Amino acid sequence: MSTALVKSLDALGRWEQLDAVTGAVQRVVRGLPLGRFRDVLHGLPIGHPLHPALVQVPMGAWASAAVLDTVPGTGRSARLLVGVGVLSAVPAAWAGWVDWAEQHEDQMRTGLVHAVSMALAIGLYARSWVHRGRGGTVRGKLLGFAGLSVAGAGGMLGGHLAFRQGAGPNKTEPVPRLLEEGWHPVGRVEDFPVGEAVRRELGEVPLLVVRQVGGEIHVLAGRCSHQSGPLTDGTLADGCVTCPWHGSVFRLADGANIAGPATAPQPSFRVRVEGDGSVYVRLPGAG
Ligand code: FES
Image (cartoon, rainbow, N blue to C red):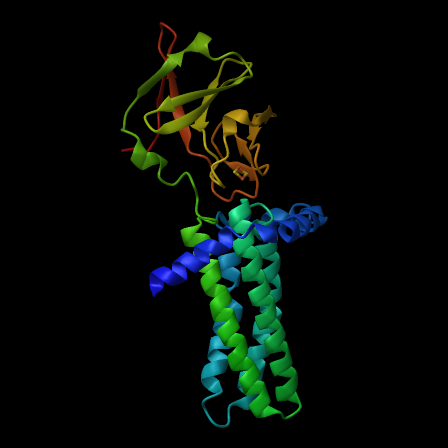
């Protein structure tokens, strides 16, 4: 049963007929003049996607309203919770849309169905709130239970998107576990032309190596923390690298992410240059 359910959820990600819609909506979302607020919605200031945190409020409010709907004499409180859920779903949806617009095609297909489900749930709850205010308690409760069912299904899609399709996690999290602790040779100074992005591999981990004009060598994990984009194909400017896939910007000196959609920094390696020009790197915390 659960396998059949997961297979059908997986099939959503292969539903290419959705691409015409996802492409059009993606252009609209990317074109919104959000400025730096876009990074706030991604969750860059908190180092974690904001959308999963924000959805706790409407889902919690709606679930609580459903409980109150089974308790006599709590109609006003239940209506209040329904309204709180509808209002708090708005910023959660904004955060979800800006994340969605920077995902892979299969993730965007699932994400679109997730978003439509949640929009339907919001609509049902908005109508529930109106009916409750007019004294239509039974209809308001029925609309609320319908909204909770749809929101639950939409939430399950969100979980599938995040955990099965990997839309949200930091993709560089395994890097320290894939490496041996200590110093490792990656070449000689002359192997790294000044101002060029050079790819090296340390075991299974690709690296981005950049020698700056002043001679300093910076080394970051080579796959982007957002969706594993190849940073060695990115653009170097102002001491930073811009990911070629969705434009996240990381500082070469320490891997800090300056601009999203990535919310996690890039693992940054210590660098040691021996007297004979050999270059060694070490990742703090590796092993
Ligand atoms: S993979 Fe998305 S910004 Fe790098």
